[in-house]
Length: 170
Image (cartoon, rainbow, N blue to C red; front, top):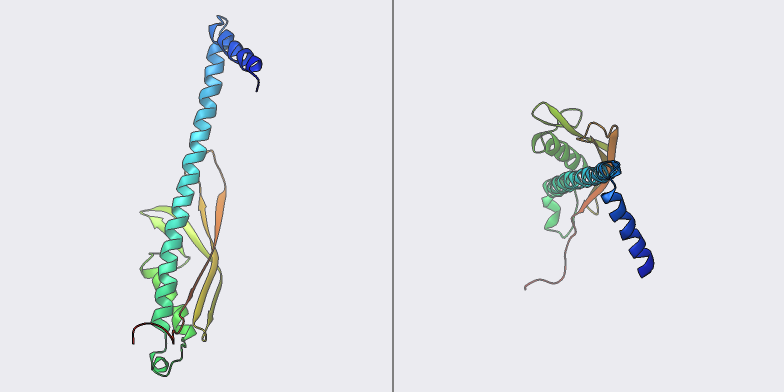
């Protein structure tokens, strides 16, 4: 923007603010509306981001612990890394119900208020290499009544237990 155009824009704003017809009040109301709208959008974005990170972190812990718990220790001595896939899946669901305090429909409540639903689309486990992958989405809603609808935040979480045969201290 050139200096002449900037001076014209500043001059137009000064004339609007000095106008005695009431245009200033309308201008200020519109400005406040836009600032409040931007603030609400930013608050909601950071709330959703925080919720997503918290759930993803707890799910990663659950997947990691399920893989570790389901490892077949009797094969580790021989240098094989094998996992009982059914035990891993059962352990993960136990974690979801007990540690994350989800109900049978995988819903999370804070007191009596619904917070989110965990939608599991795919739970894939392999025996060798020991891997557990959880794909799904977190379904939630806005805390602001004027932002209707539900929001889905997809995730994909995986844990692999690898056998290290070289390196380390000897």
